[in-house]
Image 1 (cartoon, helix red, strand yellow):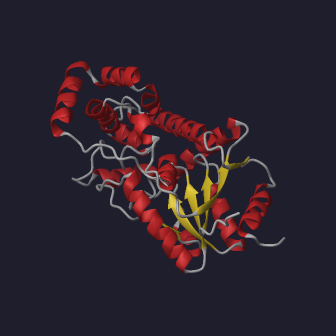
Image 2 (cartoon, rainbow, N blue to C red):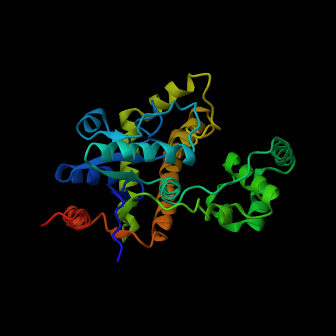
Length: 316
């Protein structure tokens, strides 16, 4: 029987506010791990409070790769992440450590491990026509069209997410196939790392929802709105950028635009974060090769340590 000689890596996945960072830091105290962030919002500089980014003291003690690597005005794609993450994993391995990738962005984990399918290049003419159609009938109607053509993609793309909605419709026109079907294909390359997947999956949503609400209120107390005001002062940032569409920031931008009052903003921010957690949990349940742990259980750290010892071949 052949031996799998690929270097080892660990994925620590979970919904927002499930305690991933705290567990990753605790594990790095006991094992030779190098931490790599897998979060589509933590890549942006100047977006600290609303992303629940680890504070400076935490990052000084537990350095994370791929945090603060982009300006909010710059786009950052799953393909960019895959390139950066593979390079970061190589750097960690070169230091004699095992990469521990921690975060909640399922698209990034999937792109990293499975690769990216070869989707067609953007077509300016089709994009312009789709935008013109949306101007006549509205993006909600365009989303209904996507739901008929590709219900899987429509379920994960919000009607207000114009960029992704337009791209999904464009790909269908260019290829005649649903975007979701093509994204499942991956690159076909074997992932060059042997992976242990750990998933923080709460058995009950109530405690997670309470933590989300409490954390959002703490963000407000720490100056989240002041952080967004500072971003709004920049001429190169606007509400349609991927960074500003991040959960919490989008709702804060609306509030500062005068579209909703403070109480409504708070409620919408908490609701949007809970919806994000719901989508993350749904994705995690599809990762059938992941070992699931309830983040509410007191024995979580010990059970996670046992899993790592077994995977790393460290005797108890």
